[in-house]
Image (cartoon, rainbow, N blue to C red; front, side, top):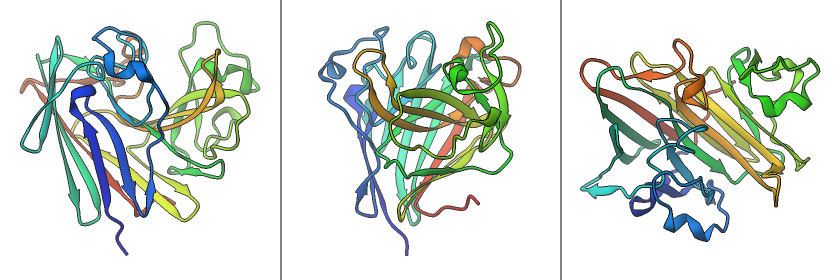
Length: 272
């Protein structure tokens, strides 16, 4: 049986996805954040949940990228936004097996960027994330207290194999334990299992690095008034912060001046 996916977005407020419904449940998590509607480019990120479009970086400057704080324009079935150095267009459509979002980023040839579908999901403590076994995963410095080996000074990440890089299990979200960590997994597709519900996410892009970022905040962030938020974030690129990108870690605009990619969402899981 196919379960339809329904998507609602808010072009006036950063193009944010405010709803992703399927199988009788809402997948996107939300929190009260009154300041979200009054942000301007360059402001610190205001976390209201949902799915934010983060480009040309996630961490770093500008915080969570340069389009979540800008109004988008809708024409027919396509939303567009103009930033200082690039333009982004997005077309979302339902399909017989879920939904697709097609993206086109236009910029000068050589422009480097990272994009993430910063999807904060409303998941139970028993939810799991399925990724191909053995995929390389980068843990970031906030994980240092949770791994057995010392963290080298200044290292932006350490690598290990999914599902437990450096002995730290990442495939289960679990109950609140006061921790928060981010990881980037070298895979273009994954699947969330939560009870009987499934959400598979997959990326396609010719000639660009693809990955899946994980944000597992189990009541450890922010330091003041922490809350629970769990993110599964398809990513063009392999780093949270564009400033940390080494060779092959960031997308690069070719001579055509365009980069195209597709995000596919379905309730059918093909991961092992």
